[in-house]
Image (cartoon, rainbow, N blue to C red; front, side, top):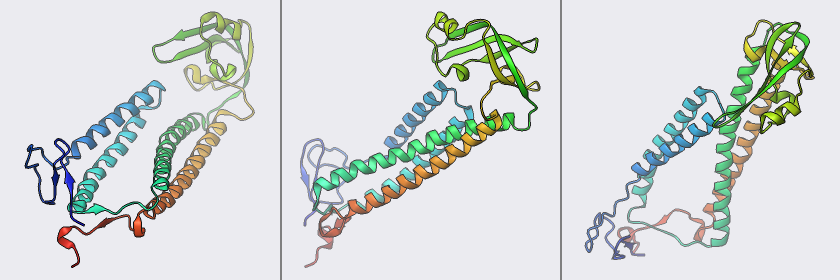
Length: 276
């Protein structure tokens, strides 16, 4: 089969595999993927940075994901030019199962998206729980009650703050109310209705900590143990998701290779390699 390549600008068909410029319109036929890769990496970094900032994730997670995106971009710059070089002067064999090929392609995209989500959300949840676990691990605490004196609701540009000023054993303390109500109000009036002044809230009191971290809503499990469980749960589910999605991705790639004629997903010889 002779090599045929069309100019994207004028549509002229070229049979010379080594041609780098269209002889009709002068358009370059060499694809430059390096710039596109780095533009895509920059967009990914901007989206992940905005996401992590909006949801108040630790700043070091931005550096982690930035490093992952950088590594992916570097690998792409080395892999794609080599793959493009192998395909010069070669054409793909026809598909024997085009419908299955399309469905498998969608499955591959979904599996790849799942892998990214498991890495992104799993790592962030694990790190948050891990930090909270070490914040409360070994700290002295005891059971007490928080008497609400005044509730505050503040609507910020990208988030909401819902907290209260009150008394714990006669001393003035501050407490985040989101873990107590499990809902976020939309106005000061709604906040006052959710937690009226004088409400007594059972808490864990950590006298050696500072700020709102001193007062935590009482639950069946203390904060340190609960955070440790959350961290381990996030790690286990993330690893399970990566294993399942990675296994499916491998199987789908194998199936995709079988969708080509004669079971060969690669390429046929060029005109210079034809068998006489």
